[in-house]
Image 1 (cartoon, one colour):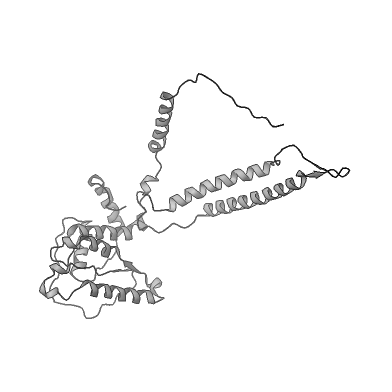
Image 2 (cartoon, rainbow, N blue to C red):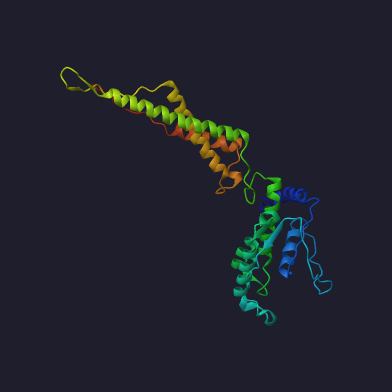
Amino acid sequence: MFFMHPDEERASVLNEAKNCLIDKHIVFIGDSRIRQLFYSFIKLINPQVKEEGNKGSVAKPHIIVAGAATVSYTYMDPVYEDMLSDSRKMITNEKIDAYNEAAVRILNSSSRNSKAKVKLFSVSKLIAQETIMKSADGLHLPESSRDTNAMILMNVYCNKIMKPIDGSCCQPQPPLTLIQKLAFCFFTFSIIGYLIISLIHRNNFRKNKSCTDLESGEEKKPAISTPNVSTLEMLLHSFCKLGLIMTYFYLCDRANLFMKENKFYTHSSFFIPIVYILVLGVFYTENTKEVMLMLTSYF
């Protein structure tokens, strides 16, 4: 995951981010808060950049035409009304919520949104709700919150390209491979075959279990026995167990409950717990004074 690393790893992650954004043209369009997000995004790559820019009213566009790109619409962040200046008192959270609802309703109402690739970047609103009280003027977010928004925005775009092994945030689910599809079909047929064969054997066993003496008309009670299990049934039963285990692994790999770094295999993470358990077993082994063996026989 980009920029969620300690300082000693930021150099390598920085190179990955530069490789992700090479020959990419990214445009930030919005008010002063979007400008701050822009500079926080740039500082992830170049921390020495200065926050300059055209803040005046010169050359303001009357019409903006944007197309042939992936558009991320950012929700308007809430404000801290008690700290707003007199010129900004008309900005209220109620109006901001109404504006966001109208924008989302319009963007979601068109069936062309999937083709236009409009994505709603709602995480900034959630971050602002928790940190806006630390704002200096009640409108702009503190620097730490802007940096977090920039990191998440970088993850949204770059994780699906670079596919880092230490994070699953913002990555689309990979499609099923041919081997996975074949394995799924194989285990499905194994389960179905095992159920069919088991039902057939159980029904045959129940029919042959009670035999009636035709001469006396009395029912004989046969010895207690279990249905004979064929080799094919045992084999399919083993495949069913293996299929359930593989399904569990697949669901764990697709889930986002844990970081990918906790699922990444290393020799140390695999063998150290095993050696630890073996050592504990050796030191906590005791000799028993009595040996008890229980045998149960049925006649």
